[in-house]
Image (tube, rainbow, N blue to C red):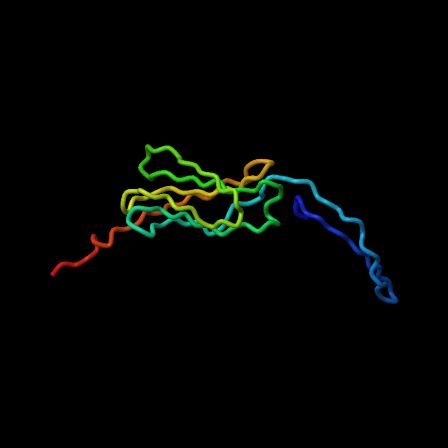
Length: 144
């Protein structure tokens, strides 16, 4: 059963004659809240223009939020071995991307997206992946 969910139950008895009719619904049972058990899927990063980095992910369905105040913690940093993580919080769970403007052209970045709710961070580490800011189309042209 999922945390922070409402359930009702019906019972069907079965014997050698067969199943009974279903009972009436139980009262609503609510499970306690918990931290998220996963992070968003399909995280990727690329540029739409030569000077931005777009971080995408698949929004998590409400059944995976596990508590109120669900949000995403987006982190990125240049993959240069010396930079610190930049962090932004996205509070609308339906959101599926974040755009970072004014970035150098075709630069590698490390990216991670973590699920967070009022109980805390997800209980699994987010996958860290490499993405690139936009590529300058003029660098790949062949001159005659």
